[in-house]
Image (cartoon, rainbow, N blue to C red; front, side, top):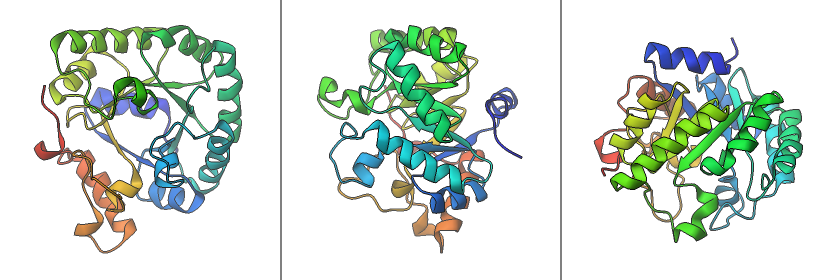
Length: 264
């Protein structure tokens, strides 16, 4: 049975955690969905793990559309979420036009990075039938503004502001909130403050779902391994078993563990 937004809402209402993984091609999409992953994210992280860039900024909309088509071909019932790449939603009309391309390619939801400045864009997308995930915290498309990949929301003022932004974006129509590199107590507060399902990456175990880049959870990370990553392949005998172990750990809330989280 296919996973939908309603499925994710039911998970939240029941207090059941759900698993999200990135995929960029048909083969991994099939493996991931058959292993029980609820949501496949076609992340602009492909700019780093597939293309070799040092950020996500070079990724184009055309590339995201291509990879979304590939994933849709291999998917076996997971909800497909596609990133809108850097500067592809600078205006409301631009966001509508570009989201339409991703949805036609097979996405069930688009993901946008930013704060409450996105309210009008999210409202316009939602009103026109495009489900939206709002990405808060460490938003990689803003790496040059942040001065690097840094944990966000450490002080109380920043934490309160992020809670306000999450509530504002939900009110505008965001169906899902994603929190990246946020102290676990703050992520727990946001998860309680909104009715929308909240997905975390480096945001502790109290969010409604967890996401990792598939290359990271298979131990294929080059360079420094992020604090929030666990190599599931090291404990299993195959890619399929590793992904199944990840899904099980997320649902049982044994991942992320204390060593994978950030404190305020």
